[in-house]
Image (cartoon, rainbow, N blue to C red; front, side, top):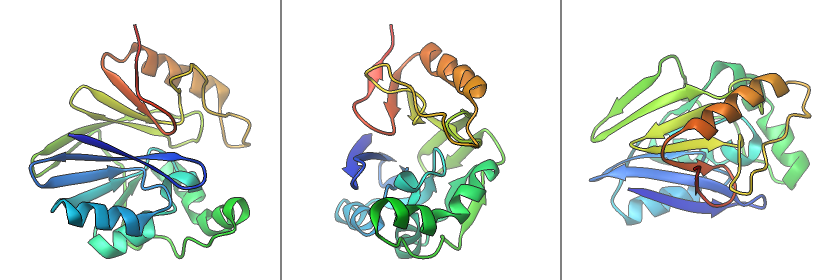
Length: 191
């Protein structure tokens, strides 16, 4: 099952993937306390928090969620510099301090992760950020800010972004057979 929570001032999609009582969260946005309560109300046990990329609007809630649920944040090593700037960036854009970084961080070092009742595949989707990843769960791709339902692509104007790698990532998303769940807006199917 997939639940979408639209959170924060930038209306970031947070996804809860679950089967039976096992869950993982993709992109906790900036409301970790709310997500933790949402999981508890549904008696879901959280096994992992995945970041599709290291931008503040996707990971500011990771610290609170990680501390409350004692669950690690999984992030690509290439986006750790963005994680290390989280407080400064989030405060600049929202005026809010998300607190310290999660203490329990796991660098994504393989393509497949198996948790009780849940199996996911991680694919590299750089371009918007150097360490952007997609999460594949069953026939669904959680793609972060690569491509949106209206056909727009994520921004590549940052000094660390790569329009060439972004084009490759967009190609991957467009070729995906199944539903695509972006970081903002509705899911979509490509013909």
